[in-house]
Length: 267
Image (cartoon, rainbow, N blue to C red; front, side):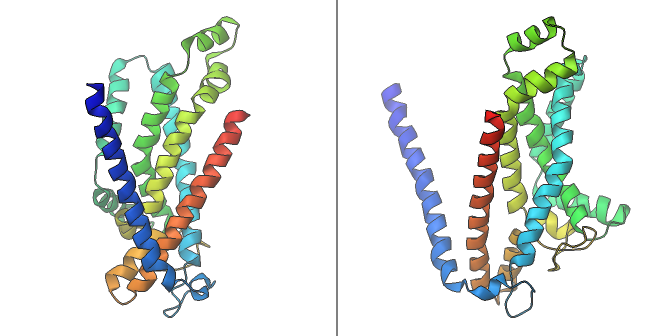
């Protein structure tokens, strides 16, 4: 059995790496020739199609979405693992999270449009997009946090309680530090979804290009910017250039996040 599955696993791994390499090489080959200094101009116009505003909007979107989603997701996981007395509540939260994770992005976009843009009168704005993204990434944060908390050694928790620490102190001093790597894994997955999301943001954040000086105004992220350029059909070369910048942007964000995560884990 081992001799049968090991070559199969290696073959599938090689195919996955090959597919990734082909995509990256294709993006670089098509996009690098179209990169020039004009796409990094501070002000956007129809000639340079600058990426500065979408890049800053993407960063603002990541930070604002995580500021809302992380406390909700982590505290929901803490409640279900340490405070919920009814198994029905725990099962309901888990079932709801799985259902929300399976919903297509376009459905989230329509919900965000109806709930935040129209009903709450937030219009097309950064905050409408971030609230929609918050609902999208919340299931991932909840599930990964629950799994991370469940892997914490129960002996450490029991020892802390036996020494007189309160449950809340035990959670923040023992459980959360031990579960931090698993929680951060959920954060990285959420960042990836935020950066790559398009459909939901078109319906909630809009497609207007502007610096995010006001979160109640419309703007666009890098992914939406690339989608708009390619869909118009007139600036496909700029769309490929945006794809290259987006790829580098994701690599930098992940590298910085990993460095901060490793520092937090060591501390």
